[in-house]
Length: 493
Image (tube, rainbow, N blue to C red; front, side, top):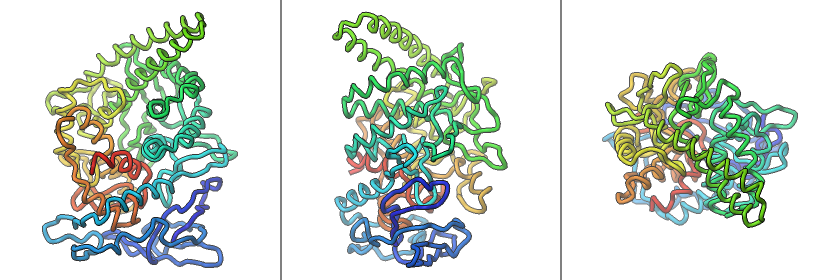
């Protein structure tokens, strides 16, 4: 069954084509009951018979049952068939040979198209975070955009998405999601505006669209000024070290945002490492753009603008130097890794998480090569799996190796050991930057076997269990997971 229109609240003004493909009339994840679908041909609705999954009705239009082309599972293979989740006796997940790399890449590209939607409320494109139940979350959209729109040269779509976010920038922050009609957006995040700057930089690097830079630079300035003086959720720049900090105990503002009974599972108050790496990269982008605009002003003979950009460049350079020096406080010499956060009381959190790898993967990096190599080596040993990076070191007392049970249990595991496949992208980028002479130590066979044979064929699941054999969990098709595979395809093959 395939469908072309997803009509579940609160996404009533969102339409997207060929959202997801489920072959046959059921699918299963290890340890969960089979999910049977009843297809009503009259109204195109699909109802799950299992309350264990999502008690939702998906309204759809029946379409081609194989929008991704011929099912890859029909291709000849020398492997003995195994049911999803079954192993070969040594607890090693099944290892299917990739029958057609070209076909697989085409299928991933087609899957990537399915996340690009049109949101009526902004009269423009957006990117859905995942199917079947995730909306167009801003952070996910911006992280997925390079793979789905820049690598694939859909520059017009990328431009429109970046423009839509800029139009909703308030007090230096960007919304958790682009607003639905007649709804005000929420701003419960710390990093979306920084991801916007990072993604804008990648767009400009790919397109040389300097007219767009002129249009968007005032938004960059607005973000810088608001964060410097302070904004919502006690977000502000620490005048002592120049780092970005926040202190709002009842809310989680980073990508690790799961909460139980209204309390964040991973609050990460104070100075988070990837947030300040984004802050550093944003400052570097801002300086670079001010220099470009200064040159343009010189060519135009506009002396007043030249003076303005000169002052801005000097201010950015001072702040960049200050932040680069202050980033050293994140290094933990005892573990050879980065502290995940420095709390409001200056107490460090030594948990080994993938946020340090995200910090090393950005366009501009303020960390030393020596520390970066040590961190990458430790992440390789503690966090890397065949499907992505764990969200927490298994040796940590708070580690949860299985994403299972009721919503409370799952939320407690969501960022406490669960594997996130999108994180393989930051790992590859960081490894290439600091270990460029060494091959990326990631064998993509298991992940590509998952794409071919498990859950939503042709796509990548949102998350996987932290413990082997790493059963797929969460949304069956996740945008940023697919985007990172597309973005780094040539690094993997």
